[in-house]
Length: 283
Image (cartoon, rainbow, N blue to C red; front, side, top):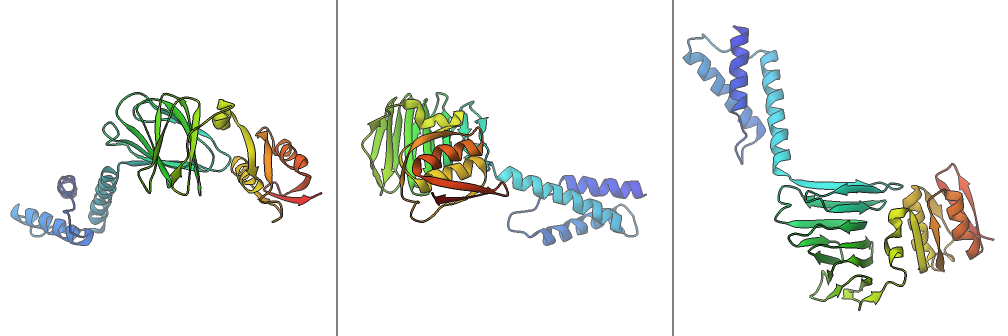
């Protein structure tokens, strides 16, 4: 008898779905009533819902509900933490290299007809030829068919460099755009897409994928933020140093080597506290 009851429950749960607009509690009560009616029609004096039976049925319904939620949401989000780089492939085999402290989101289910990605942070894309491929960020959108390019989209900074193929860079707030061919770069400032300029040393625009970082007259605030991202630590610098311009380079072999390359040419000294905090001061 217990086996028959359990089979009855499983049969009903397998056919069970929560109708749109109905709450889980209402749907649950309707399922119990339906099973009871079926039991009575078979001549049972009454279908007794034991705690065990109700627990099994509730667990199965929960699994169905979870599966339904996952099936409805087809968005995939990939996130890198500070101190982490990640290489992965999109459904069409396009390759993405994600810099530290970055995130992309895309629709897996509809990818073949809608190759659109939202990016927060920095990434290097190597796109397979096919339908239109778009990367959206807070300030701009890059549109391509098949190419490789780098996008830097952090806070109010937005820069795009084209390596191969051709890319269209558009401002989100208006219809302005620029088209980049290999070796050209542009940026968006105050909703204006700047005229493309040539990459003097092209690979430096995306050398971060090889753990090398080059800076040309960049504020110490931005340089420090990059070091924090790559090493997952906190750096404190004096206010009178934040807007000083830095031109130079560092790699991520070790933190002491990096701090030496950045601080010494700027007349700064530093000390490392508990491996996660760096305090910088003027010499």
